[in-house]
Amino acid sequence: MTEASPHNLVRSELSSVPEVADGSREKGPLEAYCGERPVYPTWALDAIAHTPEVTYFHVEGAKLELLMWGTIGNPGVLLLHGNGAHAGWWSFIAPFLAKSGYRVAALSFSGMGGSDWRETYTMDLFADEVLGACAEAGLAASGQPPVIIAHSFGGVPAIYTALKAADRVGGLILLDSPIEPPGEEWKGPPKRTAPNRVYATLNDGLARFRLAPPQSCENHWALDHIARGSLKQVEGGWTWQFDPFLWNSFAPMIMSERASRLQVPTIVMRGGNSFLMEDRIFTYMKTIFPTGTGFVTIPEAQHHLLLDQPLATIAALESSLAGISILPKTPMRG
Image 1: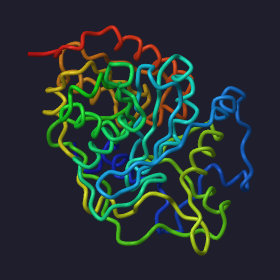
Image 2 (image 1 turned 90 degrees about the horizontal axis):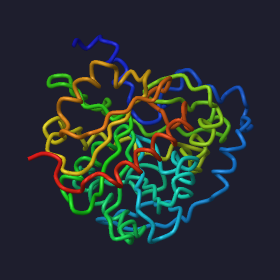
Image 3 (image 1 turned 60 degrees about the horizontal axis):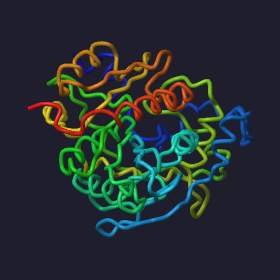
Image 4 (image 1 turned 90 degrees about the vertical axis):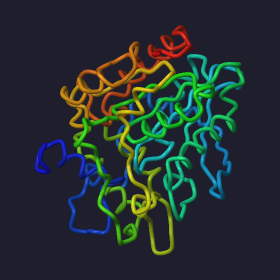
C-alpha cells in the first residue's frame, strides 16, 4: 500500500484531538451551538446522571485518573480509551455495564484526560497503569480477573498487558483497534514541536473539537459531552488536556506477532464502516489471533463506534461479556 492510500491518509490524522497549533483548520460541528449543549437523548442523560466515583492513584510518579461504577465484588471490567481521549468517553456506556452486574472502571492513561503528563512514555508504563487501575478499583474482588475493553489505541496496551500478566486479565474485547499486515504498520502521528493552542473561551475550544481520525457523527450530544471533558482551564483560557508531545518519545509496537500469543478469551469488534478496519484489515486480523477468537461487526458504525452507534455498542459489549464469562480460561492455543 502506498503512502497516498486512503487507509494511510486516515491513519495520518490519528493524532489525538485534531486541533493542534494551526488556527486555520476548520471548525467542528459544535461551532453551530455557540457553547450551548445539543439536545441529549433521555437514555444518555439518565446514564450520565449515574456519576462515577472518581479517584486517583500513582504509577511511577504520575497521578492517574480513575472513574468507577458498580459494586466491588461483582465481576470486573476495565475500560481503556483511544489516543488523546479520556476516561469520560465511557460515561454513557459504563453505567449500562454496571447495571448488568459488573464492577466497572475507566482509566485515563498518563498524558491524557485528568492524568499527569510524563517526560517519557513506554508501553511497560501503560501496562503498569492498566494493572494499577484494576487493583485500585478492586476489579478482581469477585475472585476472577477482570475483562479489559479497549477502543482504538487502547487495544495495544490491552494486548501487551494480557501477555505481560495473563493471570491478571480475564479476557479482552478490542473495539476497532486495527493491526495492519507487515509493512503497513502505523508509525504514529507526526512529532509535535508546538504546545496545544489556548482558546480565550470554552466556547472557542468546543467549536474547534473534531474527531481524529476524521469521521461524521450525527450524535452531536456525544461530541459535546466528550469535548467538554477534553478541555481544561489554564492561564489565558482553555486548552486540550492531552500531552501534545507524548508521541515524541513513544512509538507504536508491531502487534501481529503478539496477538498470536494471547492466552485469554478475546473478541475483536469493529465498526462496519470503519476506515481503519476495512474488510481487508479485518480479514487479515482473523488470521493472526488464536483459534477461538470472536469477531464482531457493528453495522453502520465507524471507527468511533462508541459515539455514532452507542446503543448497538452497549448491546454488543453486554453480549460479549456474557460470552467471555462462560468461555474456557485455559490457553486457547498450544
